[in-house]
Image (cartoon, rainbow, N blue to C red; front, side):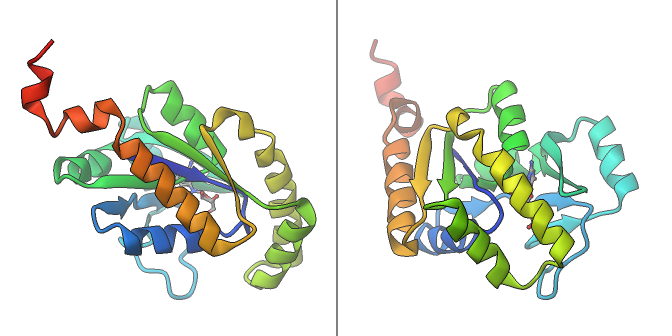
Length: 198
Ligand code: 5GP
């Protein structure tokens, strides 16, 4: 099963995803390719595959990406081969991708559930972005402007989760995943005997 989670920068998505992965050993995070430089503490192959723009563009030409996007001036993409190999190993794959990526994944017919994490209000989002301290002022203004734009796409998602309490948000995402796992399309894969009974 594929679980797509988006949300504007600063909404608390990374903390939610980290906790979900701790709770669900059968779920892995899709490791994207990016042309952005690693931040302190980030590791190649764990947080992202950090590649040059040339390498990334070659991958686009070869059709290696399930989706890719230019986010804040850097390229980010999901390798289809990587996702399929994890699925073949029996894992659910969780995607931390932006709105542009979700639009492409949907256009390519990718099944799964699409979750959008939203802040309680814009003031709170601005406060959280300011508190993070990893961006300079120009980057911060750009991210806030992008966030406002990204929020206009709430309509394309299946679920909206308001992050006013981290615990509640984690519980909500967990509940959505459990329900998704009980959809007939998911269950029937584990019950081949039932699929023969029409
Ligand atoms: P960051 O640079 O803070 O790690 O990520 C910036 C944004 O890029 C986040 O909103 C994240 O969702 C998005 N992103 C990360 N990986 C991918 C990807 O593979 N595809 C797309 N479309 N967006 C991604």
